[in-house]
Length: 112
Length: 117
Image (cartoon, rainbow over all chains, first blue to last red; front, top):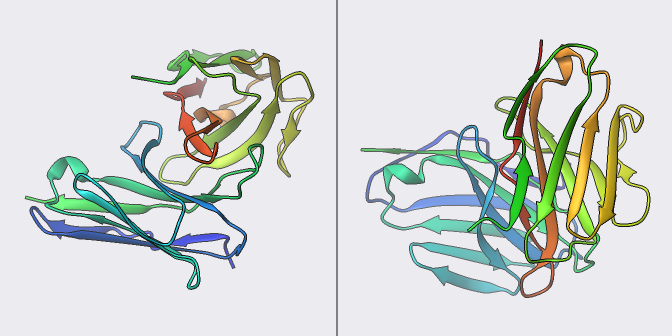
C-alpha cells in the first residue's frame, strides 16, 4: 500500500463546476497535510495547508481533513481553465526534519 | 514572491561532465532542504535530505557519489551531478521545509531542467 494515494486521473470538469480531488494516507501519526498544484514543466506550488479535522477555505479552494478516516480532499469551486494542472497531496509528521510524503498526483482538466 | 531560488533553470551538458545546481532559501534559515527528481509525467522522487553542517541523507537507490550534496550554510544547498549521462536527464527540484503554522510547510525552487547530450 502506498503511503499517500491519489487517483491519477485525468479528472475532467466543466468550467464553472466544482472539482473534487481526494487523497488517502496510511500513517496515522501524520499531522500536517498539504495540497500542491503543479503546472506542466513547473515546480509544485503550495496552495493549501490543513492541520485539524474539518474544512479550511481559502478563496475558491476548500481543503477537508478527516483524520479518523485518513483522508484529505480539495474542492475547487467555480473551476477555471487556469486550474488545469496536476494536484499533489502531501503529508508529514510534526518533526521539522521529517520527509514530506507526496502522492503521485491527480491530473485535472477544466474544459471550457 | 519566490521563497526558494534555484539556479540554473535549464542546463545542457555533455556526457561525462559535472553540473552544479544551487538552491537558496530566501529570508529563512533552512537547516533541512530536500532534493527531488521528476521524470516526465511521473511524480516527485525524493533523492536526498540535505542537512546544514552535516552529511546528506540519501534515499535508497540514489548514488551518493554521483549526486553530491553540500549544505554549508543555512541558506544554500547545492547538488552536483557528477559524470552525467543521458539517463540523468530530468527535472531536479529542491525544497526547504519549516515554515508555516507547524513549521512543516515546504516551498519549492523553480526547478532545473537538465539535459545530458
